[in-house]
Image 1 (cartoon, rainbow, N blue to C red):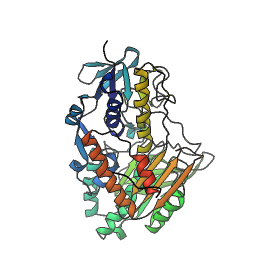
Image 2: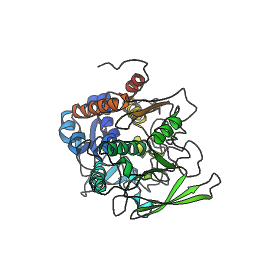
Image 3: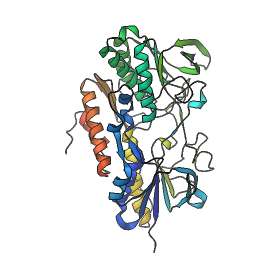
Image 4: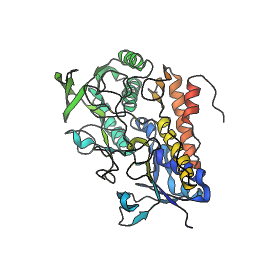
Length: 426
């Protein structure tokens, strides 16, 4: 009898460790393969550092083919053009096809820069740190900026679901400008769709509102919340500030010489519009066992899955999928597939907790939310200079883990350690 074919679509933070953990869980009981867009893993949390030359691109990359080969996992980096779940196969960008018995979708998102005129690095006027390519472009733009300093606008647009990197980058810019002794020449404004500073798409965690507002006041960063970016021109961002009743409370024409704005996300083209598989934004619909209800042999994890917002807000705000949450989804999928291959019903569920280390270069904010969506059993946040050191250590650990092809979950142990509940072993 042929072994079941398990295909992982995507090899980012979630897809890579999913391939490792599924291989560990099933061993020789299944054939595991990975389809990725490109052959390189990038440690996305380090992109803000790349954008100010605190890291070189090569320092946060891992070439994947030898890693997967050593683990006995097949790999192709040509990418998928279309998922065809009704026929259990993927159409790849080179015209070939890959058949599967079980598919794990871990593509991450498509970045919806085109939804706002003038947004983004692709023909627009703002930068991004969502991809290392964007971070390198932002670094080049920052080099030009420091030759002729002016106003900076940083933040996240309507529909965004990833706010931590926006706060990180605003504070990192502040730190770097102080080091260059030109901070006094740079007015800074933080523009966000969140209803208040520190909401983070999670209705706050601990005192993230107080901690982040205090940081911004200390660093002389002004802010606009409930912000809808109407359009961006060269050097000017047009922002509508929305009242609780949905009306326009105020309009702002914010000048900038440098801007980094996080976009809204949507599902990638390979899955978007597949009936029964995705919601209208192209995110994968899943049940409590990470399976798609219409196609139960399709599972999904990470940023590509559909999660409802925490509550109604004047401007659309998405829910982030943090590394802690993604790691939990990976473990649930690996254990469920092991049960399914053995002819048993799946029983494992992801815990959906949130953990974040937001580095500011000279300090930072950490938070833990268990579960991610309130009410919570753990609702903890803290700030301090130690967070920068913790983020550096975590970067080194995670890149080492990818290079070694290891699947060991780590976020929970790290979260417990930063809360001072116990020390990390190993």
